[in-house]
Length: 344
Image 1 (cartoon, rainbow, N blue to C red):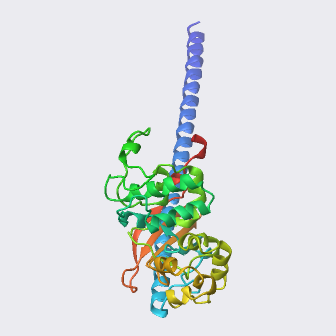
Image 2: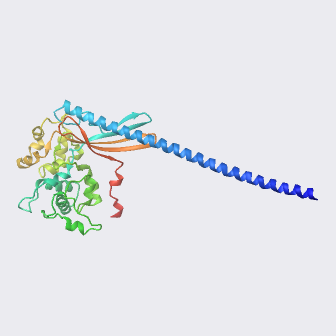
Image 3: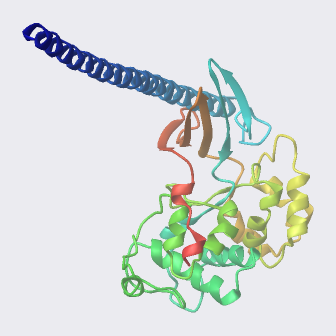
């Protein structure tokens, strides 16, 4: 009887040991699977970081290529025009394990909002400064109501000027912005991006969408429109500048018939048929804001390396027509700076 009891006890212990072994095996298998998964994730994370870093350095290389193209244009030509090597729209460059594509735009082929910051008011508050009037005309050219265009034009001027005194007929200053929810103050200085126009009194997302292709915000209190790089589809800027003596059709035809390497001087541009027929007083005022040269350019490029993507928007500037420097660099897309129309 004792022997039978011992055998029975041994069988029970053997069964428990088997269960323990199986349990340990299951735990070890789970741990091994988790370690394998973590190792796999770490490997891919490291690979993605390497790809992103490689894409970043490729973007710096694309930036250097753009700078070189602009510097060569300064060396070879008397003006800046669209026949030069820098003037690429959408060019693709093959890279190891990826590609880079993008282009360079002249940032003096648009209306510089920051130029409104340096305008001084006249003694007659009912008389709108010339450049503010150009901004109003530009808004009206994209089908903004006349009164709203006046309000936005004057308010943009007040928004950018260095004081908090209202000097226009329909513009507003800090008192109005403080009543908004959330409240804020006018910066009384330059805009860093055209998306900041959305904060100006009277400006809606619809207005921003309509006028964005025609405007820019470069870090300068001056505005010189390069007629050699102005696209025919943006002829509205010329119409606003020479208003009311120039039609959009005439302005567009002048730009479409532009010499291959551009006009050598502003006087050559003003001698063009439709422009020469504009009232002399208007031509004289407009001439102060025209140019055949440029100092500001923008590179907008994307670099793809495997599944990693880097988008860079670099503002390039040259003060001496010899060396081009990067004065602003932004990474990422435009969605972060685009107003959501659905919340209005």
